[in-house]
Image (cartoon, rainbow, N blue to C red; front, side, top):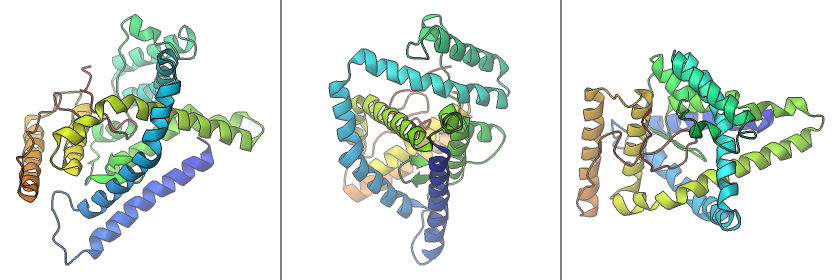
Length: 296
Protein backbone atom coordinates (compact mmCIF):
# COMPACT_ATOMS: atom_id res chain seq x y z
CA UNK A 1 0.00 0.00 0.00
CA UNK A 2 1.12 3.55 -0.50
CA UNK A 3 2.12 5.90 2.30
CA UNK A 4 -1.11 7.84 1.81
CA UNK A 5 -3.16 4.69 2.34
CA UNK A 6 -1.05 3.79 5.37
CA UNK A 7 -1.83 7.20 6.90
CA UNK A 8 -5.54 6.78 6.15
CA UNK A 9 -5.59 3.30 7.68
CA UNK A 10 -3.72 4.55 10.75
CA UNK A 11 -6.21 7.37 11.21
CA UNK A 12 -9.08 4.91 10.83
CA UNK A 13 -7.65 2.67 13.55
CA UNK A 14 -7.02 5.56 15.91
CA UNK A 15 -10.50 6.95 15.25
CA UNK A 16 -12.00 3.57 16.09
CA UNK A 17 -10.24 3.60 19.47
CA UNK A 18 -11.39 7.14 20.24
CA UNK A 19 -14.98 6.47 19.21
CA UNK A 20 -15.14 3.23 21.20
CA UNK A 21 -13.81 5.02 24.29
CA UNK A 22 -16.42 7.76 23.89
CA UNK A 23 -19.22 5.23 23.55
CA UNK A 24 -18.14 3.49 26.73
CA UNK A 25 -17.94 6.78 28.59
CA UNK A 26 -21.38 7.88 27.48
CA UNK A 27 -23.04 4.62 28.47
CA UNK A 28 -23.02 5.48 32.17
CA UNK A 29 -26.56 4.30 32.74
CA UNK A 30 -26.17 0.98 30.96
CA UNK A 31 -24.98 -2.20 32.60
CA UNK A 32 -21.37 -2.82 31.58
CA UNK A 33 -19.58 -6.13 31.40
CA UNK A 34 -16.44 -5.45 33.43
CA UNK A 35 -14.48 -8.10 31.52
CA UNK A 36 -15.64 -6.73 28.16
CA UNK A 37 -16.54 -3.04 28.67
CA UNK A 38 -16.65 -2.33 24.91
CA UNK A 39 -19.01 -5.19 24.12
CA UNK A 40 -21.73 -2.94 22.68
CA UNK A 41 -19.34 -1.33 20.21
CA UNK A 42 -17.66 -4.67 19.48
CA UNK A 43 -20.86 -6.52 18.61
CA UNK A 44 -22.03 -3.73 16.32
CA UNK A 45 -18.68 -3.55 14.56
CA UNK A 46 -18.50 -7.33 14.19
CA UNK A 47 -21.95 -7.29 12.59
CA UNK A 48 -20.74 -4.59 10.18
CA UNK A 49 -17.63 -6.63 9.33
CA UNK A 50 -19.71 -9.79 8.84
CA UNK A 51 -22.09 -7.97 6.50
CA UNK A 52 -19.15 -6.59 4.52
CA UNK A 53 -17.63 -10.05 4.31
CA UNK A 54 -20.87 -11.61 3.07
CA UNK A 55 -21.50 -8.85 0.53
CA UNK A 56 -17.99 -8.37 -0.84
CA UNK A 57 -15.06 -10.39 0.47
CA UNK A 58 -16.52 -13.89 0.47
CA UNK A 59 -18.07 -13.70 -3.05
CA UNK A 60 -14.81 -12.30 -4.44
CA UNK A 61 -12.82 -15.00 -2.63
CA UNK A 62 -15.06 -17.74 -4.05
CA UNK A 63 -14.62 -16.33 -7.54
CA UNK A 64 -10.85 -16.19 -6.98
CA UNK A 65 -10.81 -19.85 -5.94
CA UNK A 66 -12.88 -20.82 -8.97
CA UNK A 67 -10.61 -19.18 -11.56
CA UNK A 68 -7.21 -19.66 -9.88
CA UNK A 69 -5.34 -22.97 -10.30
CA UNK A 70 -4.09 -24.42 -7.03
CA UNK A 71 -0.44 -24.07 -8.02
CA UNK A 72 -0.97 -20.35 -8.68
CA UNK A 73 -2.95 -19.93 -5.45
CA UNK A 74 -0.15 -21.60 -3.47
CA UNK A 75 2.44 -19.42 -5.19
CA UNK A 76 0.58 -16.22 -4.31
CA UNK A 77 0.19 -17.35 -0.71
CA UNK A 78 3.91 -18.16 -0.54
CA UNK A 79 4.86 -14.79 -2.04
CA UNK A 80 3.02 -12.73 0.58
CA UNK A 81 4.15 -15.11 3.33
CA UNK A 82 7.73 -14.51 2.24
CA UNK A 83 7.26 -10.74 2.35
CA UNK A 84 5.84 -11.15 5.86
CA UNK A 85 9.03 -12.96 6.92
CA UNK A 86 10.86 -9.61 6.86
CA UNK A 87 8.71 -8.32 9.70
CA UNK A 88 8.88 -11.69 11.45
CA UNK A 89 12.68 -11.54 11.42
CA UNK A 90 12.77 -7.98 12.77
CA UNK A 91 10.35 -8.92 15.56
CA UNK A 92 12.46 -11.98 16.38
CA UNK A 93 15.45 -9.74 17.08
CA UNK A 94 13.36 -7.19 18.99
CA UNK A 95 12.20 -10.06 21.22
CA UNK A 96 15.83 -11.20 21.67
CA UNK A 97 15.16 -14.48 19.83
CA UNK A 98 18.50 -14.42 18.05
CA UNK A 99 18.63 -18.04 16.88
CA UNK A 100 15.06 -17.91 15.59
CA UNK A 101 15.79 -14.58 13.92
CA UNK A 102 18.72 -16.14 12.10
CA UNK A 103 16.50 -18.98 10.90
CA UNK A 104 13.79 -16.62 9.66
CA UNK A 105 16.34 -14.39 7.91
CA UNK A 106 17.77 -17.46 6.21
CA UNK A 107 14.28 -18.54 5.26
CA UNK A 108 13.62 -15.19 3.57
CA UNK A 109 16.93 -15.24 1.68
CA UNK A 110 16.45 -18.81 0.45
CA UNK A 111 12.88 -18.27 -0.71
CA UNK A 112 13.64 -14.91 -2.31
CA UNK A 113 16.53 -16.33 -4.35
CA UNK A 114 16.07 -20.04 -4.98
CA UNK A 115 12.31 -19.81 -4.46
CA UNK A 116 11.83 -17.24 -7.25
CA UNK A 117 10.87 -14.17 -5.16
CA UNK A 118 9.09 -16.37 -2.66
CA UNK A 119 6.56 -18.03 -4.97
CA UNK A 120 8.08 -21.42 -4.06
CA UNK A 121 8.58 -22.28 -0.39
CA UNK A 122 12.02 -23.86 -0.74
CA UNK A 123 12.80 -23.17 2.93
CA UNK A 124 10.08 -25.60 3.96
CA UNK A 125 11.70 -28.30 1.84
CA UNK A 126 14.99 -27.92 3.73
CA UNK A 127 13.35 -27.87 7.17
CA UNK A 128 13.42 -24.14 7.86
CA UNK A 129 10.08 -23.70 9.69
CA UNK A 130 7.98 -20.58 9.42
CA UNK A 131 7.37 -18.69 12.66
CA UNK A 132 4.63 -16.28 13.62
CA UNK A 133 5.93 -13.11 15.21
CA UNK A 134 4.45 -9.61 14.91
CA UNK A 135 4.88 -6.22 16.53
CA UNK A 136 1.91 -6.82 18.84
CA UNK A 137 3.78 -9.78 20.31
CA UNK A 138 6.91 -7.66 20.58
CA UNK A 139 5.02 -5.05 22.60
CA UNK A 140 3.65 -7.82 24.83
CA UNK A 141 7.16 -9.26 25.26
CA UNK A 142 8.29 -5.92 26.69
CA UNK A 143 5.37 -5.74 29.09
CA UNK A 144 2.81 -3.63 27.24
CA UNK A 145 -0.69 -4.83 28.32
CA UNK A 146 -3.15 -5.81 25.61
CA UNK A 147 -6.02 -3.72 26.97
CA UNK A 148 -9.69 -4.52 26.47
CA UNK A 149 -10.93 -6.66 23.62
CA UNK A 150 -11.70 -4.46 20.63
CA UNK A 151 -13.30 -5.18 17.25
CA UNK A 152 -11.97 -2.75 14.63
CA UNK A 153 -13.82 -1.95 11.39
CA UNK A 154 -12.34 -3.86 8.43
CA UNK A 155 -9.74 -5.51 10.70
CA UNK A 156 -11.83 -7.57 13.08
CA UNK A 157 -10.78 -8.98 16.45
CA UNK A 158 -8.04 -6.92 18.08
CA UNK A 159 -7.06 -4.87 21.14
CA UNK A 160 -5.41 -1.47 21.64
CA UNK A 161 -1.99 -3.12 21.78
CA UNK A 162 -2.63 -5.12 18.62
CA UNK A 163 -3.89 -2.01 16.77
CA UNK A 164 -0.55 -0.33 17.47
CA UNK A 165 1.11 -3.61 16.50
CA UNK A 166 -0.71 -3.62 13.15
CA UNK A 167 0.65 -0.13 12.43
CA UNK A 168 4.15 -1.32 13.32
CA UNK A 169 3.81 -4.35 11.05
CA UNK A 170 2.71 -2.09 8.18
CA UNK A 171 5.86 -0.02 8.65
CA UNK A 172 7.94 -3.21 8.38
CA UNK A 173 6.28 -4.26 5.12
CA UNK A 174 8.42 -3.25 2.12
CA UNK A 175 5.31 -2.76 -0.03
CA UNK A 176 4.55 0.28 2.11
CA UNK A 177 7.60 2.03 0.70
CA UNK A 178 7.45 1.09 -2.97
CA UNK A 179 6.17 4.59 -3.78
CA UNK A 180 9.71 5.89 -3.21
CA UNK A 181 11.13 3.88 -6.10
CA UNK A 182 8.85 5.00 -8.91
CA UNK A 183 8.16 8.17 -10.82
CA UNK A 184 4.39 7.95 -11.10
CA UNK A 185 2.47 8.12 -7.86
CA UNK A 186 -0.78 7.08 -9.51
CA UNK A 187 0.80 4.02 -11.09
CA UNK A 188 2.41 2.92 -7.85
CA UNK A 189 -0.81 3.47 -5.94
CA UNK A 190 -2.59 1.23 -8.43
CA UNK A 191 0.08 -1.45 -8.07
CA UNK A 192 -0.03 -1.28 -4.27
CA UNK A 193 -3.83 -1.37 -4.22
CA UNK A 194 -3.79 -4.35 -6.57
CA UNK A 195 -1.22 -6.19 -4.47
CA UNK A 196 -3.18 -5.57 -1.28
CA UNK A 197 -6.41 -6.69 -2.94
CA UNK A 198 -4.79 -9.92 -4.09
CA UNK A 199 -3.32 -10.48 -0.61
CA UNK A 200 -6.68 -9.95 1.12
CA UNK A 201 -8.56 -12.06 -1.42
CA UNK A 202 -6.03 -14.88 -1.22
CA UNK A 203 -6.13 -14.84 2.59
CA UNK A 204 -9.93 -14.88 2.65
CA UNK A 205 -10.05 -17.72 0.13
CA UNK A 206 -7.69 -19.83 2.23
CA UNK A 207 -10.06 -19.49 5.21
CA UNK A 208 -13.24 -20.63 3.47
CA UNK A 209 -12.75 -24.37 4.25
CA UNK A 210 -12.53 -23.73 8.01
CA UNK A 211 -15.03 -20.92 8.65
CA UNK A 212 -17.96 -23.32 9.17
CA UNK A 213 -16.49 -24.29 12.55
CA UNK A 214 -17.52 -20.93 14.00
CA UNK A 215 -21.11 -21.17 12.82
CA UNK A 216 -21.57 -24.83 13.74
CA UNK A 217 -19.66 -25.03 17.03
CA UNK A 218 -20.59 -21.77 18.74
CA UNK A 219 -23.67 -20.78 20.70
CA UNK A 220 -22.70 -17.10 20.51
CA UNK A 221 -20.56 -16.20 17.50
CA UNK A 222 -19.21 -13.05 19.16
CA UNK A 223 -18.08 -14.85 22.34
CA UNK A 224 -16.59 -17.73 20.37
CA UNK A 225 -14.45 -15.43 18.21
CA UNK A 226 -13.45 -13.28 21.18
CA UNK A 227 -12.33 -16.21 23.33
CA UNK A 228 -10.59 -17.97 20.45
CA UNK A 229 -8.77 -14.78 19.50
CA UNK A 230 -7.58 -14.10 23.04
CA UNK A 231 -6.41 -17.70 23.45
CA UNK A 232 -4.51 -17.50 20.18
CA UNK A 233 -2.77 -14.26 21.11
CA UNK A 234 -1.76 -15.64 24.52
CA UNK A 235 -0.45 -18.78 22.83
CA UNK A 236 1.66 -16.78 20.36
CA UNK A 237 2.89 -14.31 22.98
CA UNK A 238 4.21 -17.12 25.20
CA UNK A 239 5.33 -19.35 22.29
CA UNK A 240 2.91 -22.05 23.38
CA UNK A 241 3.95 -21.99 27.05
CA UNK A 242 1.00 -20.07 28.48
CA UNK A 243 1.28 -19.56 32.28
CA UNK A 244 -1.19 -21.80 34.08
CA UNK A 245 -2.93 -18.91 35.83
CA UNK A 246 -3.50 -17.10 32.51
CA UNK A 247 -4.71 -20.30 30.89
CA UNK A 248 -7.18 -20.99 33.68
CA UNK A 249 -8.41 -17.39 33.60
CA UNK A 250 -9.12 -17.62 29.86
CA UNK A 251 -10.97 -20.88 30.36
CA UNK A 252 -13.02 -19.43 33.22
CA UNK A 253 -13.96 -16.42 31.12
CA UNK A 254 -14.93 -18.65 28.19
CA UNK A 255 -17.03 -20.89 30.43
CA UNK A 256 -18.76 -17.91 32.06
CA UNK A 257 -19.63 -16.40 28.69
CA UNK A 258 -20.79 -19.76 27.38
CA UNK A 259 -23.10 -20.18 30.35
CA UNK A 260 -24.46 -16.66 29.89
CA UNK A 261 -25.14 -17.34 26.23
CA UNK A 262 -26.82 -20.62 27.06
CA UNK A 263 -29.19 -18.88 29.45
CA UNK A 264 -30.10 -16.41 26.74
CA UNK A 265 -30.58 -18.91 23.94
CA UNK A 266 -31.80 -21.87 25.96
CA UNK A 267 -29.06 -24.15 24.66
CA UNK A 268 -26.10 -25.86 26.26
CA UNK A 269 -22.87 -23.87 26.46
CA UNK A 270 -20.06 -24.75 24.10
CA UNK A 271 -17.14 -26.57 25.70
CA UNK A 272 -14.10 -24.37 26.06
CA UNK A 273 -10.73 -25.64 24.90
CA UNK A 274 -7.22 -25.05 26.13
CA UNK A 275 -4.83 -22.83 24.17
CA UNK A 276 -2.86 -24.88 21.69
CA UNK A 277 -5.64 -27.34 20.97
CA UNK A 278 -8.68 -25.15 20.44
CA UNK A 279 -9.82 -23.78 17.09
CA UNK A 280 -8.33 -20.32 17.21
CA UNK A 281 -7.93 -17.12 15.28
CA UNK A 282 -4.70 -15.88 13.84
CA UNK A 283 -4.31 -12.14 14.26
CA UNK A 284 -1.37 -11.80 11.99
CA UNK A 285 -3.66 -10.45 9.30
CA UNK A 286 -6.75 -9.87 11.40
CA UNK A 287 -8.76 -12.45 9.50
CA UNK A 288 -10.60 -15.42 10.91
CA UNK A 289 -8.34 -18.47 10.99
CA UNK A 290 -9.52 -21.60 12.72
CA UNK A 291 -6.46 -23.77 12.19
CA UNK A 292 -4.64 -25.14 15.22
CA UNK A 293 -1.53 -23.14 16.16
CA UNK A 294 1.68 -24.48 14.72
CA UNK A 295 4.21 -25.61 17.29
CA UNK A 296 7.51 -23.83 17.12
